[in-house]
Image 1 (cartoon, one colour):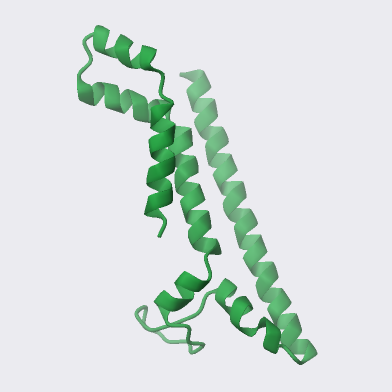
Image 2 (cartoon, rainbow, N blue to C red; image 1 turned 90 degrees about the horizontal axis):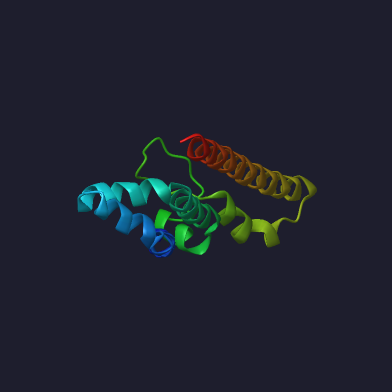
Length: 138
């Protein structure tokens, strides 16, 4: 589910790699593999962004994940048993929340989902800032 997005964005990022650097590397005697490593290092932030976009889509995807993991509300010790995601719980049960405590539980699930998205984005930004600092010092 996330591989098409990651590969499409990574392909676009790698196409933005300056050909002057590629030709310069070949002119200095670099092999194809050394030039590829140079391109990957140059495009590292964009590739990381592609991976984070793919992961964000997987986290936010509701219906595909519901169908894959079974859409059951039973807790099991097995990793292979069915389950539900937070977005799946919100999609399936929000309209059925007829008691105030049930509605509060749905809002709590939404808050936890939003906070987990926020933490993921903050970590991604911190890692991108670190990559940019390393690129500027190199």
